[in-house]
Structures are given as structure tokens and as C-alpha cells.
Length: 422
Ligand code: LLP
Image (cartoon, rainbow, N blue to C red; front, side, top):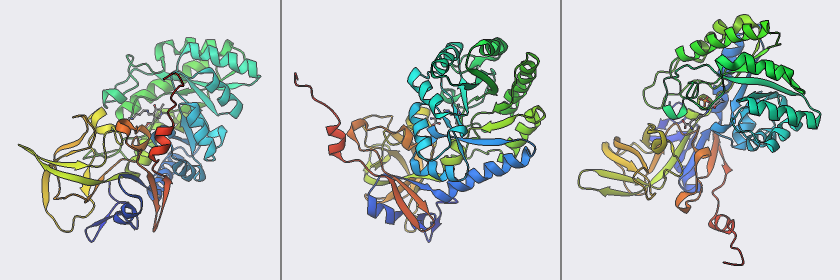
């Protein structure tokens, strides 16, 4: 996972920039993304899908939720990426970065009227509809605007994704999508409504999948549904196969993108549909890290604590999902490994990144890198404890740029308004 963040002579780099250099100029903590890694990951997807599905159109719609920084989106836009979005904000982000509206698919269980209106006016490629009431509203708004909404239903195939319960989405008990048993009825309703163009089927069963079997099971059910829908008279020519593969955080063995594409080909290739895929984590996750400084080394009764200047407000994944992130000293040239509990500054016990973890012996001021933070890192950060959001840095070869600066205290505090009657 460290290909783009190597140690050279014991010092960690992002591509060809020493992390200590960035830290000197921007301070810590900061997120750091490798532009080359992002581009390479995207090209690998493009290559895998266009090779497996030679006779079909394929479209990679990057899941903006994983990391919506404009520098990231612009990088992907230039490579031909589309976008999977879940809000008006994400549509705006994608458009601002130059992603064409006709490459945008719009998912989400609670699209509200202004969002639907905005998406219709932009002319997005497809609404992935998650319920019948949403369908009715989209038809009404489209009719009022005199636009046609191209739609797919997100189908809940009731398969187990074998991932963390909080990010598993394709079981009958989850809030997502239309149950596969009710799908034909939903499509018939859609076909009867004005200003709706039925064009596709969508499925997404969860995130951080490390096996292909759940994808295969879901696609098999979707393929049968497409056949049934066509026999019902619907013109289905798009299958959106949802998010991408998981990534290696620790020791997970992830199937190759080629094998993922081969599953899509095997289960869906005969349908001759345009295949849309919505990867997020697998494009960004291992293309980014979070760099912090040790504030104190504290000796407790039973353990040594490495107390960092980065907290759960900056990276929520360990406290929220018990997620494992590799933690590595930026300078490993001088010391041996030592066992620490690695914690942040926030006023909660959950503000813990790792327990009993081996890291090179460190002292106050040393830099520590938390790995695999490019996806679902900065985007899930908050200002809890009135901590400033960590800035985001992008590196390409020997260049680096601040792609989102650290806010200052005045900006943050002055955003509040005190009414005259207080
Ligand atoms: N498409 C849809 C409809 C989704 O809901 C998601 C992720 C994706 C695509 C992208 O999936 P990916 O390729 O990244 O696996 N915050 C959690 C992850 C939540 C994922 C939600 N949906 C985490 O930090 O693990």
C-alpha cells in the first residue's frame, strides 16, 4: 500500500516530496494525496473494464463522497471520469470540476425537490431511484420543468456483502433501494408516468468488499431482472453495478480489478447494456495519508501513549467502524519499534487510532503518518472541539500544492451569528 509513499533512506516521501518538507511549510496535521496514484488507479479501472467488456460501452462514475476535493475531481475529470453523486452539493462539485452532466448518476434515498430540479436542469445521465414516492416526485418535477428524467431503480437484491454492518447496503433489512421482488411493479409504474424515461437498473450492495462472490450473486439476480423487465416491454440499456472493490488497510487480499470486470462481463455481458461502475474507495483510499505530529509521549500505568495532534474529528473511521489504519513513523532511520496506544487530542476515549501498535520509537515533534486515508477521510471530518479542519495537500512527482488550506479561527468563529436579543 506504500508504493506512492515510500521511505527513502529512512525518511518517508509522497512521490518525490519529503513529507518533512510539507510539514515544515503547512504545519500538521494535513492530508496528503498522490496525484499519480489517483490517476493510475483510475486508468487501471478504465483498462480493466474496457478490456473485459470490449463490445460494450463502459463508464466509470467516481463516487464523489469518497473525496470531493476539486483537485481530485479535476484530475479524474481530465481522465474521462463521470461522477456518482448523492446530493446537490456533490452535483455542484462535480460540475465545477468539469465533469459533464451527461456522465453523472445520482443516487440517494432522500433526494429533495430543489435537488431534483437542479439535476434535471443540469441534464444528468441518470437518476438512481430508491423508492416509489421518489419516482412520483421526480415525474412531477420533470413535468413542471418540461424535462425528461432518465431513470433506473436501485434494486436491493438481498445479498450479504460480508463487510462492516454500517456500510452494508444490499440486505432486505437495509433502507436502500427497491426490493427485487417489487421491481417489476415499480418499473411498470415508472413507464406509466409522464416525463420519465426508463433506461436502466442499478445495484450497490456495500463498501469495502474483499470478495467477488457477493458482487457475482447480486449481478446474477440483476441480469435475470433485466430479462424480465425487457419481456415486460421496458427498454433497459444501462446496468449500474455500484461501488468498487475494497482496499488493503492491513492484510486484506483484494481481488484484481480485471477479475471484478470479468465478473461483470460473465454475469451481465450478454445483455448488451452500457455498464456503469461507481468506485470511490479503491480510487482514493491508498492514494492518501494523514500526517500528524507527536504532541506528547505519555507513560501510563500499563501503557505508553503516543498522543498526536490529529483526532477523531479529522479521521472518524477508527472510532466509527473500528477501522484499522496502518500507522508509520515518517522517519524510521534512527529508532527501533516500540508498542504504543495511539490517540488524539479530543475529549473522548473513542479518540483512539490504535491500541498496542508497534511504531518506531518517537518523541514529541516527530511526524507520524496514518495510512489509507484518501477516501472517507477529509470528507468525514468535523470541527468538533473547535479544531480547524486539516488542510489537504496534493503531490505530483516533485511538486506539491495546498488544495484546501487550513481555515483560520476568525473564519470559523465569525460564522456564528449572535441575535440582538441575546
Ligand atoms: N455507490 C453508492 C450508491 C454508494 O453508496 C457508495 C458508497 C459507492 C458507490 C462507493 O463505494 P466504494 O467504491 O467507495 O466502496 N464511510 C464509509 C464508507 C461508506 C460508503 C457508502 N457508499 C467508510 O469510511 O468506510
